[in-house]
Length: 249
Length: 314
Image 1 (cartoon, each protein chain N blue to C red):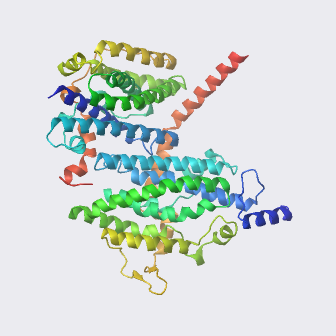
Image 2: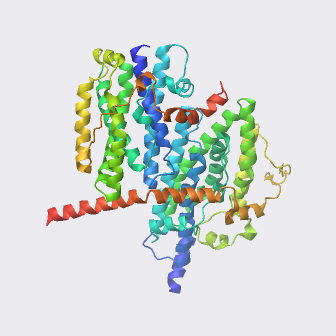
Image 3: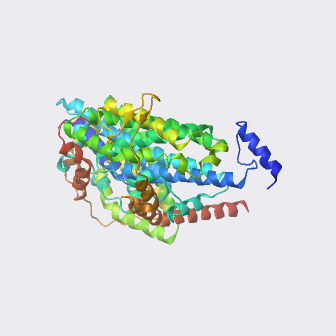
């Protein structure tokens, strides 16, 4: 697969899957204000997915629309990192997942927006502003929960311990990513990891949370290898287009 | 209560004057508004559920975004209306408790299920359509904060209604399966939508006083008729059939006449016996209960921050 198409699909899928996850909170959040916030962030992410998919479909030239790419690919053709498909869990787990991904996407999109590929740059420029906001919002909640009550602190530490292994995959570059680095589309893995750790380090310090490294580094999302969770998510999301093929909605 | 104050209030309102939070107002006026505005807010909050039910399964990216934005607006309306009610001296906590305990009511229409995608779309068309019919006159309500809130709410609801109609059109003009889905939704939502305007005028306990206070501008039956006349034409444009064998145009009045509304069903649903009353309340309480530790953490954090800044100032 062409490296630009692959990159567009990967970031489209990250956004699609995470947006689908966040949408689930709407009407179930701890406050109505958070219902508004989750709906808003889900909208940002699905909007990003839509743009990345349109680009991928156009470059691919097989006449696949953004909807075709979202609704008619199986889990093994989804290329998101496994972090974003991890379950919502409790509120602590959801905001922890959000802060881990948003910090990464903020940095990558910031680079991509100034990078050599104009199509990706245009999408990234919009996405960067959104992800910077998601990082700030989720980061504030991680701090609040980490430095809130005993219970909220314990839940936050548990969420971080649970999700941390999946964070490594964000920086597990393959040949496609390396090519994109050479073409000045993606920043190199070491650089973003360093920046990412700086952004998160400050949040975790203020939250009083500790990174417990246990050596487990699951991954493979870039090649279509996923946890069991993804096919359930897609089955639910794709039910109508799959049941009524070729139908316009 | 001072009778001179009451007289002045009545004549101020009769002359289309606005009442503002710090103005003197009769206690009944205040209580009526608290009841109405908080019920309206609760309806927005519970109303997120039947449509939210289809966010994860919306059939295209565009529809998913439209639905998310719509449900987000409803949450926003809820917040906006709670704030308007707070200006009357009731707290958000009290209103939340009234909803959770079952003491406060919300619009009964949300106790019906969204069984197919078309139901989620039909809510936009019919329920938002009915809501706007009800709410446009509220933009001229005598209570200033409520009237101003309704101006904004109505703009967004009108947008939702157009999107709902457009979504119905896509189904009605689609495959035979989609058209059947659309018809099924109309069959399910038609009667609850026209019942949404409340009991007929001769059986509406609060109406006369609300009219005198210019909280209400039109009677339930007048508003219902307005909505029916609009919805019948729209259903015709969609090529869908209104599930009422008695529906006919009254040549003399120019209005569409429906068959008898089943008020027994309406009251049964109001009193908790609708298909989803229990589900909606369980969902709301679960969200509230499961979020308790988050709200406590936020409070604890805010207190710590305040102590820190006081210490720094000292």
